[in-house]
Length: 75
Image (cartoon, rainbow, N blue to C red; front, side, top):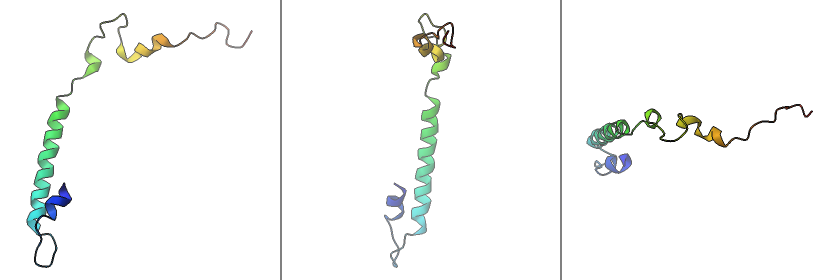
C-alpha cells in the first residue's frame, strides 16, 4: 500500500515527490491506530469461567493425559 501511495505521483525526473511519503506515512499511522483499537476490543478469554467441571481452561487438556504407572522403573 505504501509503495502505491508513494509512486502515485512522480516528479519530472520520474522520482516520487515528497508529498507521497507524507501521505503514505499518514495512512500508515491511521492504520496502526485502527489496529490498536481493534486489538483492545479482543476479549480476554483467560478471565472467563469455563462453565464445565474444570475450573481452569488453560489446563483443560490435562484431563485427557493418561496417568503414569505407579512404578515407573518397570518393576
